[in-house]
Image (cartoon, rainbow, N blue to C red; front, top):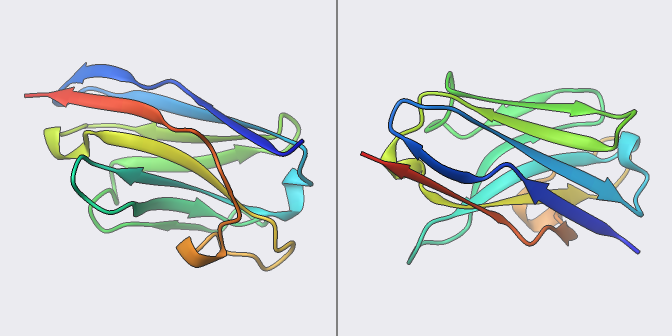
Length: 124
């Protein structure tokens, strides 16, 4: 059974930090690109960050310099370290997997597994 389970969301004040985790099961984790997306109320789901099987990262302009995506293939887990959080970062954050194997990118239309999401709320 393919499953992505996010954790680590919560309420934080502006300027604070959170670390999200996503535990994957049922997929060949190490060869697939993984990513984080978010969806704020009334808005479309958008890219936050992706990381390829080789560790190549890609970030949305809005989070560059503040967020860091990483992966631990031994634990089948991908992380999102979020620093200097701002109210506009408030959203449900979703873990994503692109099971395209080596060379996969986890671009939105290539994602074929989604987690259920974890809520991040940043107060001003």
